[in-house]
Length: 457
Image (cartoon, rainbow, N blue to C red; front, side, top):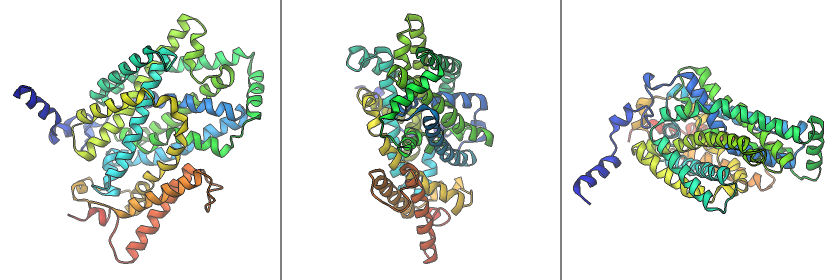
């Protein structure tokens, strides 16, 4: 290898903090005012991000377990609303501080303690990236076993990585033309399933018959909905930090978690009830070449936007915490997501409830630390003077995660019978942070962002 090539590799890998800070994405410091983005492109990006195939998967599972009216509609709405509340709280912090998730975790968990939530969330979002890669391959191949699936899935992984490499501006350009086509195809898929069984009443009757033999409870259904998008809710700051107005910061999680996901879950449930599959590309291909092709193109656009945004999340967070250029973390995360995409998509529903238990407690300490302990005041100038660890935050997360997992497997815990496991872990981690913080403070030990996190090292 020539010296010049080595030098290029070293330069590509090396961090230029000033260059990263001036980039549109700026993963290392809070955004400046000129790095904020216009409202319409951000909202279009939110719709495209929310148009994730997991909504179809979740809807298909709900359609097999609950009657469409009223149980399925309520389970979907309540679960998405729960995610919206969490996403709104986190998104508002991102808007006010102009910080991405990696920076916010440093405020709460400490400069080194932030590795715990960032690595965990990065692994999960890389997994979502893999699911998107696999879904793209299936949309074109309609099979997981053919060579076409592997070729198209690898192409999708390369495409997503290349687009994300260019940053948030490229993501906006991909999302804008997708919105109208996605809505049109989704409405057509809804009409197609209703028409296939002869109308609304026959559809409801078919749904009730399918749900009659199911053992799925309302709590399980809501937990499934929460688990399908809780990762997106807790990383909402990575997008809302670009908002110039508070209403946009709250509209982004609303568009993602209420409009897009509820819409997709309804489409997925109808497909599962009538056509036996949540994949609208499958039953649209049965309608002929033209309609099928439109359906595949629409799904491909949706997955392209989703794949880009899911890859953008771990790339920005890991760049922020490990202080590497975003181009480096994008390539690494994109490669891992592409490899995972060749096998993880087929097993999506088997681990979604685990996410619902383990992920929400991560953000509990951040919410309490920002809104209650620090009264909505984080000082970005203190980022390089934070403590190495905040043991209170780490302990609160572990307590919440362990008890949430115990509740999810049926152990009788106080309050677990009336609170969903996904919400249970979040509430426990928030209460644990409050109790531990003020107990240690009462003992005369300084803790939290106002003290332990802001102590100079």
